[in-house]
Length: 87
Image (tube, rainbow, N blue to C red):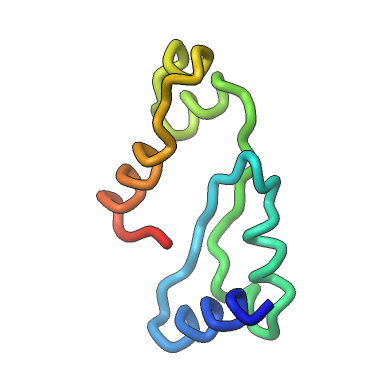
């Protein structure tokens, strides 16, 4: 919980908000942040996205690469960084 509290404190001080797209963690990140006092004010959105079709529709990932497990998860992080910043 210390890490979640530290992230919420950072977000409250610096005023950005967080949005997540989780698969393996099934909304665990958003859950942990929302359990911290004031954490809800720092959350923009949280999505749990499993299917290749949903990942393609929401984030533009190539479906064929996702279905063949050739998609490097770092690509998602890099896309997020280019839209703003990512944790």
